[in-house]
Length: 75
Image 1 (cartoon, rainbow, N blue to C red):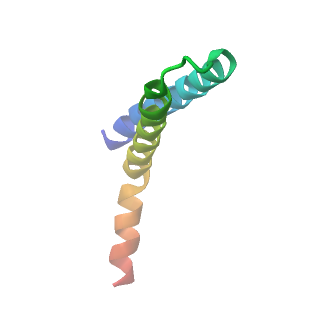
Image 2 (cartoon, rainbow, N blue to C red; image 1 turned 90 degrees about the horizontal axis):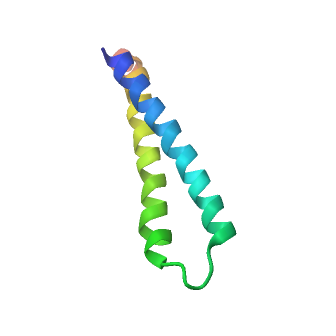
């Protein structure tokens, strides 16, 4: 169950990174002085932050048991 949840979050993270890249390219090519700063500051960068959070959740699902095992064996 944990691995399937990790896979779902990994797919969500990849999708968010792709959408961020496309939006950034589109904004860079088509944006001008009339482009709202809201889309740049909050919309675009919060999407990147969400992608990083999804990636962290996916990695913790995949390697969380390994890290807890390593930490327990060091004591």
